[in-house]
Length: 376
Image (cartoon, rainbow, N blue to C red):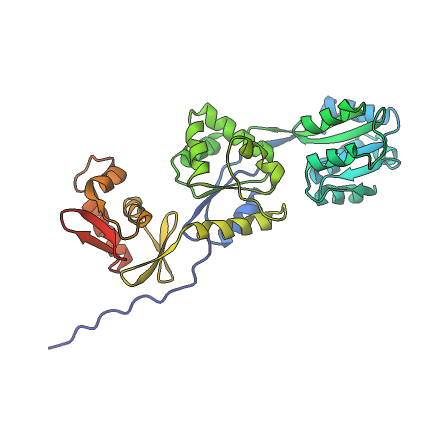
């Protein structure tokens, strides 16, 4: 008689930190770079640009604003973005307008390091920048008197897609002559289908995290959600279940105003944003012990004893229901409502059978005449 030797369990492999999670990217600029950072960490990435940038280099509005800046000496300049300020200088050069020479006698303030780099790259000297990289701190600095009295002084403000009403209004209120320079505009993408799909996905809690790299993108997503009739669902999803990750406080503004709490990295950089997603997503899902095995239920997969197991939607739904209350019995009718809406009496048994086969471990117990539970 030949003894049957059981097959050895597969060796655990290093599970990438975002394996089993789905993360949406709403960025317009550098979206591929952010997607690559998340993909390398194991995430399933959904690209859904929420905005697109329309440059105004050939726009009469920008020409007129630049000529107004050149009309008389400028006392102060506020550069809000690197790409915008650099684009303004390049456009002026293409029009043979002596903008750099004209601004060389002004105090040039940078909202952040990218704007500072554009100032220096254009041959100008940056005088000051805030630690927070926010327009609010720029305004606070100016109103403090650090740059001298503002009344009657000409201040050029390079806009970055938003009109910056608080900054402009604050300067106008103290009598400054504010010259608004609209270098580019934010508008909806030409193809809004991915964004419209995303808002429905968020409302259904079928994505684990959404990243935002600009305030206009956050505002645009909420606007499209309202147009699609799912704003309440999106707000509920981003409040409970879907992690909203903003690159900084300015970007988070429209979300926070809508009551959504956001995660933010210490530094407003794409790499830091990706690391914030890595830090926040896995920590939300507890590592459980079930049937003598270590189990972490993630977005669309499970980590079992150090190996990633991809699950079909129905088995995943069952496992998530059981993992919400480890050890507690979940009845068949309750599971049936989540798996098939209560329409298929055999759906639960089929889902549990497939779940057990995929896991290959005694993690799920049947409680006779009652339902199922995790074997904790």
